[in-house]
Length: 350
Image (cartoon, rainbow, N blue to C red; front, side, top):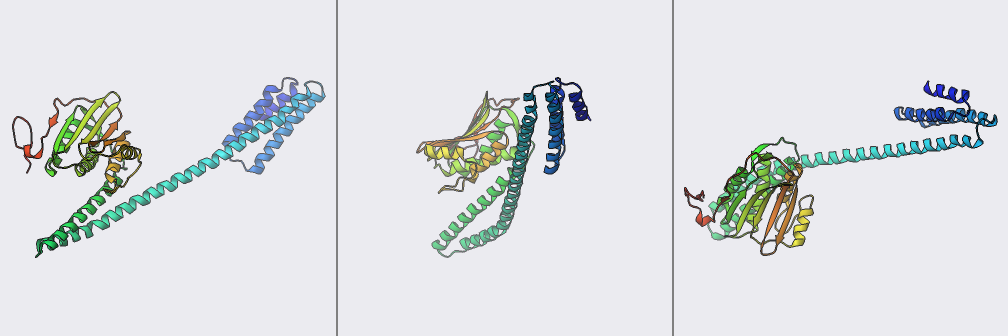
């Protein structure tokens, strides 16, 4: 109806038809955006509008009301409208293609999760059974050679069990979970205390982060992976330390060790990796789990190292508002110094 009125106004007011002329084409563009046009129908409407407005402009030009150059507005508007239609169709095809790719990636992710879940479930039982028989062989061995072979089998089964557990953990890291306020300083101390009896290292922890929103189980899983890696690349008497720091740009957790270290190139590759980065000493799942936890909270992972000096993995998290701070750092001495005491807070290694 509005277009019909504008066409009438174009005819009734020669020399002043510019505004109603453009309103007709604007109305056509608006209608195109709300209706799914068939190409033939769109072409018919476009030709009809061009013919109607063009006829009026030619009539006014022939009557001397406007110059003939004004009639060029019709093919120009048809060209502009055609470009708009082409752009919309291209964009629709791109959006549809992106939707297809997103759906394909979603299905792949679902398939991977199902595969990991099935593999981990199917592996648990045979690993447990094989481990039981290996222990029977070791305990009933008549010679040292058989016992040593059984011990090797048990060690490899333990490795396979840890890999299975990490695969399941990595899969669970992608699921949403609500964060809750927790005292990071206490969490770091508790986590490190769990590792004290596992190896003859100088275990230390110090933190001034305070209370922030986390999922404690996931943070613990990430730290366990990093501490296991640190223990693997250190020897008796080496230092393993967790440092929590509250900064202006957020808060960090660093896991440092004085072990074998790594080259700057290897550290850069680990920092830039987006998934597991296997090496001759492991699958790379540990760091991948830690990265999944950190990135799910908007953070990032940085790795530094120097051969023969040690390495440092930094977990950076975006700003939080700590409510409390830990008063003093907690330092745990080496295993031989782990004696129950009332004045230094150390633990007895049993």
